[in-house]
Image (cartoon, rainbow, N blue to C red; front, side, top):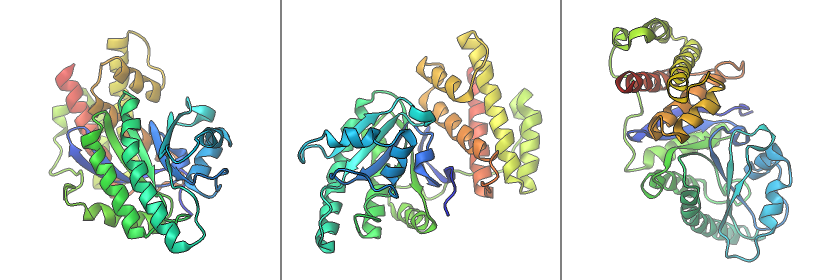
Length: 323
């Protein structure tokens, strides 16, 4: 069974502050700004599907009612703002129209595949219409109920996710989310088939000199020691503490108030121009992955620890240089 929360397992820095990653978990538990799922044009969502799970999270029927108001084939995708309903971490749901569920399997494969391509192309303008920095979580599309060839589907989604960084300047983080091991492996292989993807994932290339990080040194010493002793969970907890300290200082200095929640404070710092989009993206990743470390069903890997340590050091370096 897949974990309840999304575990970020692999990160690629496409350009400074812009990350393409791979996650494992339930997209309905996303804390990204937007989740991207697919749905048939017919009335009623399959509850075992990603769109069904997301719909249940925000109040079943919310998406369904909006989806049913779309008449004819003109709408290849629909963007719904959910205002963080029912405690959901995401604010927007982007639904890609898979068309009608044809009876013939071969015809259905071709129809769904074509509709996904058109829907994903149409989604670019919807994403840009939001007009604010975004992180996206993207589910597998078309393979379970659309019977689309898995190889083609995951290549399509991976290529689209990478291309978003060129076509959507406000997108800072795109994460492909797998709910089961087979899908995770398929996404992983699809990412490594991408010709334009950096061949190395985010990693620490050498020993860390913590004396360069001033009063953050004590906590970073603990994190480095935990990483050297393969205590990935402690690394994530300490790194979250470090970035929370950075945010707290900026809130007090620039917003002239006491810190509140890490989620809300980080967004306000971004909205008021205190932090650039790439630092907001790094903070978001460290916060979310750090939260996972407090849940007993999450067993972080050494790669999780290394990636979050990498981002934490980037955040602290930027803070010390800027403030």
